Length: 533
Image (cartoon, rainbow, N blue to C red; front, side, top):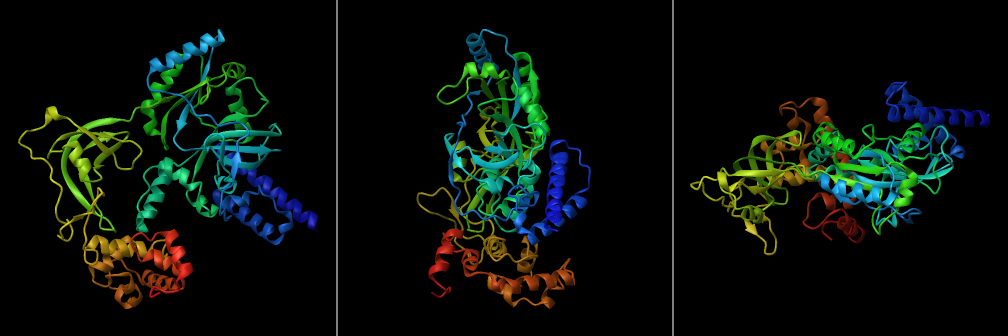
């Protein structure tokens, strides 16, 4: 009987690995998502009832759930070098001359997109994912295997004629679509949005709960086979083999016979990158022949057989229409430049970050200036300069506001800090509402169905003015509100009741005491049992 169960489990695992390969590598799914989920649930149930057949590479482990308190440091068997950068075609031509002089032979290249994410090195043994390690300092990195296993595009079981043991390197990244989803959730929970997909992807890999990593929707591309022995003579052949084994390889990579073909590839993607669903910050060019790579070797920091071409940040000119000011949950005032809409890096830009008064003074902004806007690694583009030739001398210099734009209270500026604050924390609407949004957020009390819009509505109707007011709400008070169905009202009341059982550390974090983040809240909760204490 147990042999039949074991065979059923192994057959299901093999089938699901194949479906993952079809979906993520070949882009040719053969069953629906619904059918896949049914098979996955069946396997989960079988594994739950028969733990004796545990496999660390089972497809069920993609969902995460493993908690890692500390990520152990692991030495890289093969050092992870950084790449030399070039910023124009002259740099590339000089590099090609050095390569040809060293080899005295014809050279062909592979050109690949330079994904903007977090580098990773993954060890495979006997076709199974054994260990995944971050780049770190190139000599050693953090072992984050459980988190990497949640990335669907990284296979846990290989197919075909793969070698017994090798490393493969690649990039973990976030698509713009998934990055926007994460930030939308954060804003609904009253949290600050993340600044860019690259840092968010890197930070996600260090989350202690792999189930939370899974929710981020990370993607991966693999681009470099590493071993002491190679099952091919060129890098291009290795890429094709890696794809046949189950790895997600960049579809845009191109074999180039000459540097002119490389230049054409760069020119194309310098513009076409805006149509991609993910960020790239350049092109990587590698010598294709592996024996030539070995001959060229390495400098102290970089391989001589590879070069990164970095795209310049795009910059456009547009008119500054006005400067407005936003008030955050903590009372911090953030100035924002409202611009005449202009196309930048594939999107229409209407606003740019000004951060604080010092930035405005440094730029010397006047009303209706024509400004240069650049989109770097931030969500909101930034102003990097002013076109003084177009300035109307009659337009006055922009003066930073003295009073809060929401409640009229005189602003304060703490010495040695760049930001102005509104001190009216008890009655300034954005601060009051912001604290309540923070209180119900997932990391705090996690009160479901109480989003930003609902809280703003409750505040406008004078039903709540602080988190304590949530606990006095009655369903009868909610029902008359616009777009409030009976089921929604009941769910809100149920969520509030449920929050009474939340651990004390979450309450401490949720009430928004200055300088009390998650870590401090945990320490306080360990030493004190109540707010009074």
